[in-house]
Amino acid sequence: MRIIDQIREMRCWSEAGRRESNHIVLVPTMGFLHEGHLSLVREGRKRGDRLVVSVFVNPTQFALNEDYTAYPRDLERDRGLLEKEGVDVLFHPPVEKMFPKGSQTTVEVERLSPLLCGAFRLGHFRGVATVVLKLFNIVRPHVAIFGSKDYQQLQIIRRMVEDLNFDVEVVGSPIVRGKDGLAMSSRNAYLSQEERQAALSLSRSLRKAESLVRQGERESGRIIHAVRAEIEKGPLARVEYVSLCHPASLEKVEKIHDEALLALAVWIGKARLIDNTILKA
Ligand code: PAF
Image 1 (cartoon, rainbow, N blue to C red):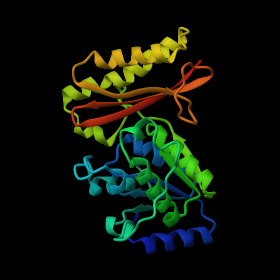
Image 2: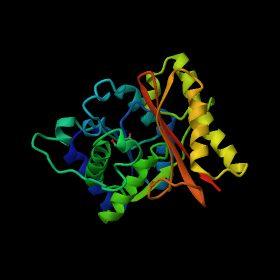
Image 3: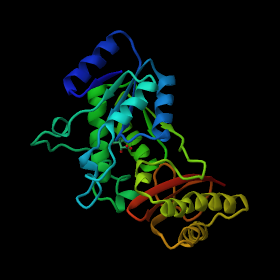
Image 4: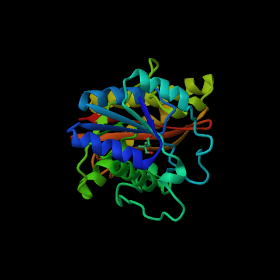
């Protein structure tokens, strides 16, 4: 596996690959890899013949009061894991090369960004869209793979690619859960054992909502109430939001007609966790 930290070298590698008609796949990550990321890497392997994984903790998607400095990092471990998966390039650019002094151009996906997580993490999706666009410009992938746990992020990237006529196929990969149901996240590293137990209420609440819908419930208000009640049974969880919305526009829905996205964000100790499911009527 080649490790590239220079933008120019990354670009040259990709251009050479394209000239040889290689199909290039990019899996963008912020590192501290877990099974969820590795499932994206394995999906990536199937979808092309050259696989690039970027590891870049993007400062522009963290607000000032957020965990940019504390965000878990372990490049050596990531490198070992990616090598075993047969990744071709680990792209790990320095922050000052990605965002040199004076850079001021950003990408705003206007209507999707302020909803759900965006209402609580101001500027977050501007940072995500901007860095993903930069990664696309540098790596020039044919395909890019993203996890569905970050459902809103995935929708925003799809929208950006469509709106800006980017020639990249955006693939969403299913959420990967531990045996206990907890969705894989680098931020799970912040949880104590007791908090991890408490965090299981997130997936439990989603399963509860699915079961209510199977029994015929369609009213958003009642489903959201049941989800919150399930999470708030424990003393350690603080719900940031629970929302039922249209899976594409992410606008709130009062009732489930066909299908709806149930998305939630919950604080457990220092960890802000998100999870979601699609409820089908
Ligand atoms: O999902 C992530 O890890 C990040 O938001 C991403 C897409 C790598 C952009 O920094």
